[in-house]
Image 1 (cartoon, rainbow, N blue to C red):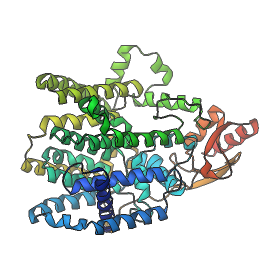
Image 2: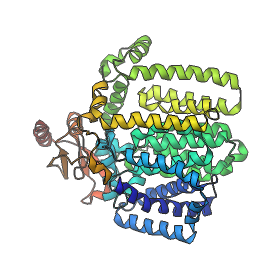
Image 3: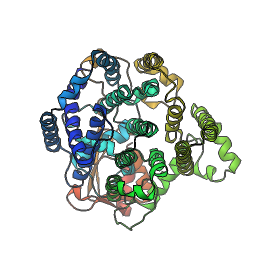
Image 4: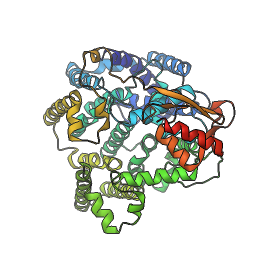
Length: 535
């Protein structure tokens, strides 16, 4: 906890400093301290994304960025913003803030933390954005700008990767500034996301902020669209906010305000072409025949796995392909896990949304409903996994109760929700018992006294070193890569490459020049088979 507080003392002034620069360049998205902090995140993330094309996000990049941010903080006298808060407001912010910081000290437990977030961030810190990186691990193809942002602050400012704690504190500040009590009501749910640099938290929360601003008649089209594009680059399945803003605001006369948002999207698409070979992961459109694109068999297997995950891996792809329309629907609603209840809740919310839209009959609600329908259709088409449409529950809650929940009720709900969530984190065995698919429960521990000083973290997995062709690589003695040295390949991916008869190779001697795949010779395939047998 103490080390997170130290990180805050460094990162908050830096974000405010860059927020001041952002506002001088592009204007102010809304009034208040939260606007500066969110704008600082936006600017830093975009700058680091561009820099990562050329250099790794190492300690030099972080040090220079910290220096610029702090100097801007002092030059613009941003510290005066803190003096405008009354004692009562400071208390309202401080108590929930300490709870958020404390929640952030627990063990990371989201499974993607080990196989996706940490390896991603370590790669960015060591090499930056690398051509054909998806050939090493396809999961790198969906690299979020949020992980780029975290990588830029991971050398010494936030070595425990608790950037989501900082984000949630800024979100809390926004709630108190705007008196958005319905958001405080649901904030405790986000405490499950603060132990990892999970991209769902900033994407969902920022999308709610944008929606709240539009509902409160914020007409800053340029910056609201830019932030909508930023949300999309954090988590593309939150595409509804970009669709909503486009449908609701963009008339012919508003096109002139789209420039900054288009730049944000352009950088993101270029990054995807470089890393993945296509503009949007996992959709294989926009084929430019780039020689570093992943092998089609690997892409096909990934798409099939996504479909199987929609049914909780209970059916093979060959079985799913034989489904009738009724089979698709019936099996989706009868999965033998908690996910089926989320599926039912999703359908119920969509039906209620239809009724609500019909009753309201206003342009804003209609545009919002249309964007949610389009997003839901896309999710159901590619992979109907519950986690891809769970944000819809937050959206519907906000439009239904935006002005109906009062301050006292929201604070009471916040503290009740916090109690149950911290209790769950303190006794992870209960989560494991009630949710067998909660695999991280095997590794987690409850609260330990060490958390008062530093956030809880897992020890590194052991690993082994191998070489195929010109690529020396590492395989962890675990099914996830986590923080093995780079380039690391999970055992599952090694088997996948063996089945496809290919393996990643360096383009040149310099690993930063990128990767392609090549067909395995009979000797290499036999060598790979021996490697696989060890895992």
